[in-house]
Length: 179
Image (cartoon, rainbow, N blue to C red; front, top):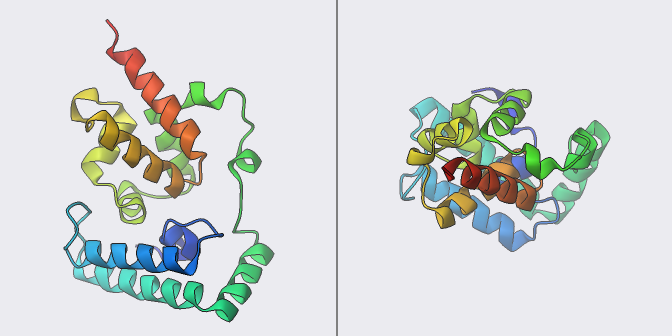
């Protein structure tokens, strides 16, 4: 696993920069459960990856729950131009919901230089589901209520507009289902 992948602690915990201390604590506890195998879903990790992920997770928790440390961290991210990047700044939006497809999501993930395994660790989406989404394999996709939640996490992990991704992808899948 690459260390650059964890530069942004908000991305690591899948949080918005405006997240409250309680939201940071909740995200931290959720990831701990997944890493320790208590969560129902989640990727399996090798011992070395698990230790490194725990290290970065604890760093993120310590910095984002300490008011002073968080202020300096946010200032650093703004200086490095690595935080608070809106999707509109990354890509012109012209009816983007019509563009949302498995291929589009895969290209965005690859543009961020993340393998499926790295993305799985960041988003807590299993490799099987990531493949099904990116390949638009309708038979392997979970039922609609679960798919919507998974797509929300997928979009957050890629810093894409959540509702646009969910609506666009569901629309595309529904069109594929029609005879």
